Every structure is written in structure tokens, then in C-alpha cells.
Image (tube, rainbow, N blue to C red; front, top):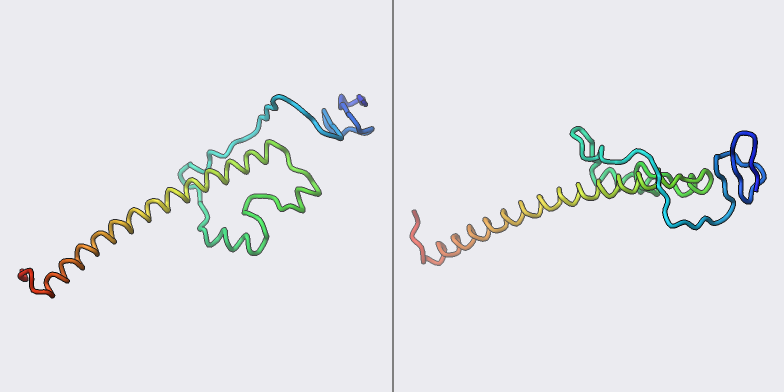
Amino acid sequence: MVFDSSGNLGLGTADPSNKLEVNGTIRSKEVIVETGWSDFVFEDGYELRSLDEVESHIAKHGHLPDVPSASVVESEGLSVGEAQKIMMQKIEELTLYAIEQNKRIESLAHENQDLKKRLTRQEALAAGSLSQP
């Protein structure tokens, strides 16, 4: 254990550069991380990317937009708070995509129902069972 003159505590490391630096596993009942959150996704003016844009980004970069690549995380690490914030942003974006898709499905279901009614009416007219208006 090392406690340096800057007030940094190191466990399993001789040269800590953070207030608490552990070279090994940490077990805890709870960790509280205070960081920004992702509710900005629900604010007016938030530009939700189209799924085509997301697909293109994944094809080009191999990871989701606004998410660091595996190589960046491996080389630089990723704070727990930042990871949670990014995951919540993606969950909230997925919720918006699901809402949008649900609206499209409902619209298509109504359109399909209307077309079925029209087709039934056309078939009845063609069969001569209904008089034309």
C-alpha cells in the first residue's frame, strides 16, 4: 500500500496517479457514481440518428455511435460512470426507436385494415352481389 504526498492511495501499485488506484479486483456491496445522465435524449431538438445512419456507422467503425471502440477501452480504460451514461443513452435511444416503430406498425395495420375492406367491397361488386352507388 502506497500513500503519496498528493493524497493518492495505491493498492498493488507503487505509483498511484488517482485518489484511489487498485491493481487488482475490487469487491464491494455498492458503488455510487456521480456523473451526468442521458435524459437529454428525450429533450426537444435531440437528433435521433436514422437506423440507416447507425447501420452505416457500425459497418464503418465496428461499434455504435457515441460508444468508444474496444481498442480505445482496452488502451485507455472507461470509467464506470461514463459507461453507465453511454448505456443509458443507448437504452433511451432504443426506446425512441421502438416507439417510432410501434407507430409505424399501428399505421400500417390501419392501412391494411382499410385495404382489406376496400378489397372485400371490390370483390363483392365484381361478383354482382352489391349494387354500385
